[in-house]
Structure formats: structure tokens, C-alpha cells
Image 1 (cartoon, rainbow, N blue to C red):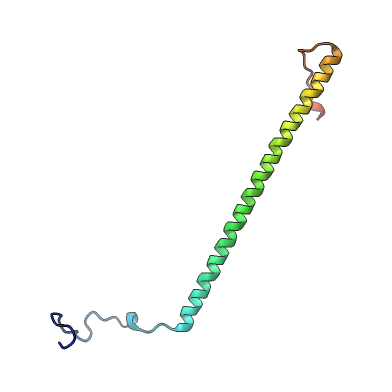
Image 2: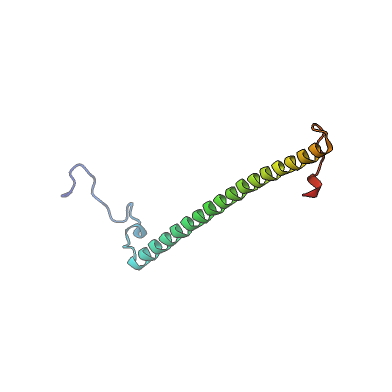
Length: 99
């Protein structure tokens, strides 16, 4: 009991698991690290692709809403022109089937 006063002496084979104390193979450690980094890079690329796709879908939806709004406005103007020419201001003609 020279090293640790107050501690019981270490006995051979008690609480010892040889796998826990084997030195790790440095090549295996490097390989695991490389695989981990590659997986991190792949995950980051997947995330970037997903965000890029999401952004593109939002942009398309915004353009689609704007285009639909413009078309509704044009239809309204065409209906108003027809109504004015016919002399009936309040009666609007449905020309949406012409689009």
C-alpha cells in the first residue's frame, strides 16, 4: 500500500477488463475520425440542398401568387371595358374562360 494511503490494494483480476485497457489502434482511430468528418460534410450538404430547395419553392409560390393577382386584375379591366362599351357599368361579363 505504498501509493494510496486509505485505499485498498489493487488485486490482480478484480475489476479489470482487458479490452478497456488495450491501446487503440491509431489507424482505426484516424479512419473513424475521417468517416465522422465525411458524414458531417454529407449532412451539411443535405441541409444546404434542403434549404436551397425550400427557398426555390417559396420563390416560385410568391411568383405564382403575383402572376395570379396580375391576371385577376387584367380580367377585371377587360370586364370593365366590356361593361363600359355595353353601357352597363354594374354588370360584369365573365371572360375568365378566355384566359
